[in-house]
Length: 367
Image 1 (tube, rainbow, N blue to C red):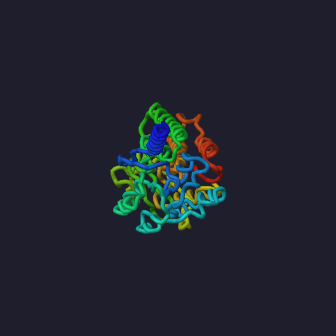
Image 2: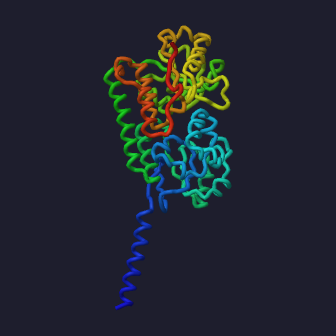
Image 3: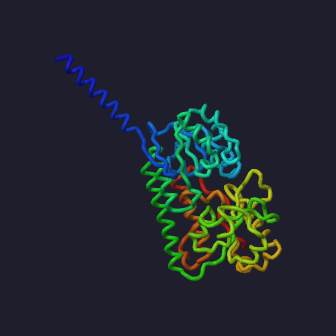
């Protein structure tokens, strides 16, 4: 009888262990349609991009589970944002930098030495790394890919749910995904109701300043996708794929009715349109107004109607980029969005989901 009891207990314990393991195992499909299997919710994450979205989805302690990052894309591209977060989350200053993934600077050996349970990458990073992804996975590090750069509701929602499932924050992820979809659906409904002929829009990243033409964005990619959703006619459509400069003469010939210059606080951007945390809006407007001094620009419809906007470049491809979409849509369709306050919505997102306040220059236009 005693032996039977021991056998039963042994079987029960084995079943419990097997059941516990099965319950902990995570099966999922990433944004590229790749089937992923992890033994449990990762406690050691190698994070490539989407730093704020990761924090918003996972929660206040998200960076306690991050062991390494690709630092250049945060510290270098969004320096004021990096400084704002490092003040409230000192740990990010100590995270190991595994190098960039867009300039062949990725340190594979260092990444492996961190023993991450998963590498969470943006789709553009996955493509840039190429064969290195296979080497990461051969070392026992699963790679999960998400994509907010596509700038579509479907991709934003799916990426959010993927991160939520991966990190055990599914309820928070569903809430964020639902709010994002509802906000964008509201914009598209208002734009459709407003009707009319779509206004011609030119977008140019403000990294190089007014003295040199910067790159634009094509249909459905980053700011190009935002313009499409806002009901504008992007003059770059059909001229470039994803991103690249437009011929200055072509820009003038198209006579844009709205000009959008995304700005940021780049480490190497002395002449850029400054935007971001701690930046005075007056400084942004001053650098934005300088663009009207370009040959031929003073006579453009956008200049004459004062539809020349600056939006924070770090705000696109995020879970709160609907606020920037609202701002652009309101500039294109003032009456349809007269009851919408994009700046208040932007601040509210930070109040609800992030540990810092949205204080600085994020969306403005020339006076």
